[in-house]
Amino acid sequence: MFALIDCNSFYASCEKIFRPDLKHRPIVVLSNNDGCVIARSPEAKKMGINMTQPWYQVKDQYLSKGGVVFSSNYEFYADISNRVMNVLSDLCPEIDIYSIDEAFLDLRTFRKNIDLVNFAYDCKKRIKDWIGVPVSIGIAPTKTLAKLANKVAKDDPRFDGVVILSEPRIIRHFLKSMPIEKIWGIGRKLTAKLENIDIKTAYDLSQVDSRLIGDNFNVVLERTVRELRGEACLQLDKSLDPKKQIVVSRSFSEKITRIEDLFPIVNDFGVRACEKLRKENQLCSKAGVFIRTSPFRIKDKQHSASKFFTLSSPTNDTRDILNGIRKSLPIIF
Image (cartoon, rainbow, N blue to C red; front, side):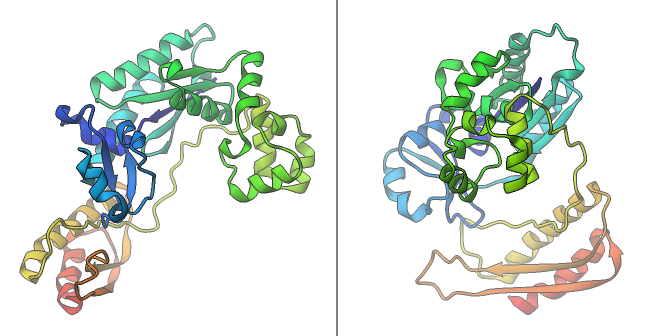
């Protein structure tokens, strides 16, 4: 069996950790430039706030109803994510960190008589008690089915955040009720193609000849079909590809008009970027600075500029990066 642990409304849940007064308040988190909504608490969802919705469209109405808003704080979210993953690693060493708020566990390493119900609720309680983040858990024979189980656990309050799919009869029931577009890895274009050949539910897809799918679509969809039937084709991926670039950026709550005020902030961003670079045991050969005014202040004169510099040799030395930053920022300011 595989388990998928997914943090609920992760960014919004992180903001509530140190603000118990916001426990039942609607919360939204905004993108880097405070342009659109990227996370919503359950209370904000009930108010009709949609993901990626432009903030200016809902700001006045949302705030007038007592809603709370936060600018994104990715260092904070990454720290909380690391704590969650550390707890999961203690519970099961076979872990595949899928994203900042999701991880698969390979429960096949446990003895066969593991009590999946107790394991799931212990995991859920431990993360909530120790870190303060609510999670949903789906457990099933394959990663694709675990993803499906997790979605049901998150969307249907009757399951109290945990769904375990182990019996074929129960799996069939959920497959028949799951629209094709809700299956992991199937996007809009593929959904349209499948619906054209009368495949509309996860169960419909599971009944198709996998070789036929492989011949007419691709091997990825063929694996999905086999996974929906209970055949584990997707193993844990423990290798993380090295990053091609590292970006540290923020939007500011107040306008900055003096370069003397901007210099220490940009220098701090350079220090953080170099810390990330060394943590990954990597070197960089090119770095740069970019600045822009707020596109949402439409009455303000707009300015956007960037300056990149090539280093004499690949490095992860903070001094080299900061030296380039100090020369580049005045040019674009």
